[in-house]
Amino acid sequence: MRTTLGDPILEAWEETRQKNRQRAAILDAQEKIARTFSEIEERADHYARQLETIGPGRVCAIQIGNHPDWPSLFLACLRRQLVVLPLEQTISDEQKQSAFEIGRVVAAAVAGGRDVQILPPATAAATTEIRANDWGNDRPSLLKLTSGTTAAPRAVRFRSEQLLADCENICETMGISPRDLNFGVIPISHSYGFSNLLTPLIVRGVSLALSNDRMPRAIIDGLAATRATVFPGMPVFYQSFCEMSEAPSLPDLRLCISAGAPLPPETAQGFCGKFGREIHSFYGASECGGICYVRKAQPVPGFVGETLSGVEIEQVDPDKGASLIRVRSRAVAAGYFPEPDEAKLGHGIFIPDDLLEKTQGGYRIVGRSSDLINVAGKKVHPAEVEAEILRCHGVRAAIVFGRESERRNEEIAACVVAKGLTERKLLAHCRARLSSWQVPRRIYFVEAIPVNERGKSSRRELARRYPVVR
Image 1 (tube, rainbow, N blue to C red):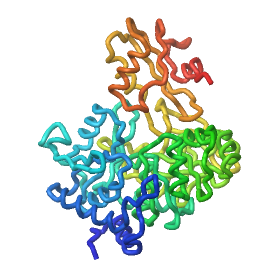
Image 2 (image 1 turned 180 degrees about the vertical axis):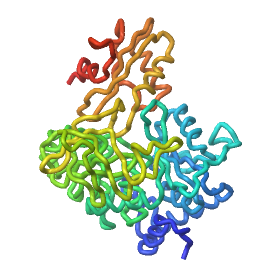
Image 3 (image 1 turned 30 degrees about the vertical axis):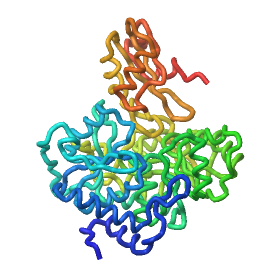
Image 4 (image 1 turned 90 degrees about the vertical axis):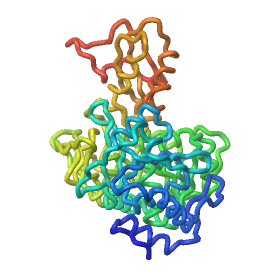
């Protein structure tokens, strides 16, 4: 029996691999076996040997897209008692360097074609002398990057038992079992993908079909080819499926999940009418994993259903129609890093920025209490985008705001005071320096930043003044 170091995820994996061994664990989008459970174990040993010179508690970044070696790398890091920092492939070089500095990253796994390389410290970060993080007796297994209440990014600290609890809450609530095949096109590096794709494979033996092609036609063809039974998707995918001509039937697909943004009722109804499948909305956060799940669809905008198994929530202001909530569960993260914010996250409690209304059938999201913009589940602080716009030569002032988007929950727009610039040139500047989801969809050039009667700029008023034209 391989040592599991008292780590609950390693203990669960030991049982999973003993039960499954030669069973297919990971398929590609054409149903070809990419890894058996035994091969995942072999690759984990391979990477653990490559990481053996790195001391416990140091941080290893993983930026490999939806590569079949994701579970092996994660298991290898757990065995070496390293802390994993997932990074999306679309993150900008500047943001990647910032993440390296925040986490004091000493190694980075990157994908080069079919192969994965683990870069040494001198290549992974700007300096070879990287001070170790002082975790004390609370060393995490995983760091999730998220936007803070200021423009500066920060990370969320998770121990293995918290990641395991989130996996159990999700699988128990949604009825996901080893008989299922997950179709993985959402990024494993994102909180949604990590919890719905990676940990169910490791902990419960739920096989996975992986794809890096996010084009709607490729996704639906992959669902049909692999005969996947569970699809964790986003509203934008389901809307595209509804609009698609000559779409294949999906007789094996039994569970359709939607997260990242509220699911428009018309999209849910259109999909059900076309494919005969109900879409189940799923609401969660990087800081605590899953929160709510729609067991039975309702034609109510923003409806997110009831709490997951193992999760409790209470309204901060129960006398109001809509309120912040407190989330309690064993899956709530240990805290923020490098600076804690225990008023928001700590001691098993997390307070999201969303305003929720309690209805007879469950909860409904009616708004947000902060300026953070929710772009298909990714939180963007407008100040970070504004700072980059202001760096462009010719820009004198800028204000960034989020406005309602049918497919992405919110999209980013900006009002800019500038001289000698075009929208195309300014967007090109942003695309070169920001991650794709942070780039404004529209820029409005104005003589002066709009203000209200009190002389203040309001992002919410700008969202109403400059709505998306449908």
